[in-house]
Length: 450
Image (spheres, rainbow, N blue to C red):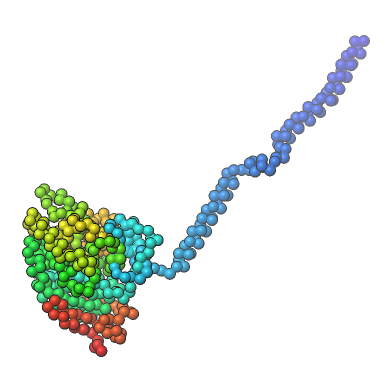
């Protein structure tokens, strides 16, 4: 009986081993298969289970490719457009006069032309008229007194070197300067240039009553009477000091007249020293001025509007009033111009600083040419001239010396398509020099005129 029970237990144990071991093995293998080969997932779960990093890199690459392709297309479109001159960037259309920006150009923009220029003031999308290629640009210069003729020759060379328009120079001169300049222009025989001389001695009585401590003497006051001196049919003119050097086409400056607004009749660059702030030395008392004041080495004059405003009466009354306390001018005409502007700020249109980079001893002009890419007019407005103290004076001096030594006979560049006033049929345009003031005697130099 005992043997039989033991036999049954062995039989049951064997049976359990035979049944349960395969079952456990199957379960074990099934669990492993679930871990290695998961059940099929839904489409959404499949998308979420793909490597995120790989997809992000792919999308970034595709986006970069599209960006580069778009940049290339934009570049091709830009290159396919016809080139534009610098002044055409800000200017557009036909020119009817001169151009300018609103009250303050500095900090506005220019390229003057052109683009920018200057500085940020207006949108490049706003285009304004360009100076017509045959429009005559009028320039007035007082050239009389000690060494003035030497300086003005360098100025004239720099203007002629860059110009692309006919020019009409109006010189207020003494007899010596007139002889020198008339001889030079006749020997150079530059096409499409006309020169008028006005006798400075006849104008002395207009300004001799004003005491002036400036080294320019009485001639430094004669810009005040240009509305009376220049022809009544001349409506606008660029007025320059003799110690100026141009580094660009003067037509760009002429184009600024177009930007004058309202009653603006004077285009001036802000003074780049602290003179009119009255803090250069103890007890320094300058003439009244608007802020830092304005420098009169470069002036845009709307002569017709100035005459309507009775400019002669305006500046005379202002000068008489201020002289009662100031006793004399220190900076010649500049003091009187600033006193008038102080009382009538609406008269001035502020030019961008690069139209008159002033190299005086106390100048702050470095701020100007740090902010702009190109300088257009250099002004040696110090009695020391080329010996003025300035960290960049070598650069400016080399520019000046280049034109000082330049051969004026190399300036005979024809302006094709712009016949002279003297002879519309002549292929070779001669020089028209007329003597104004006491007399008007036209003298044509060059090929015989019909």
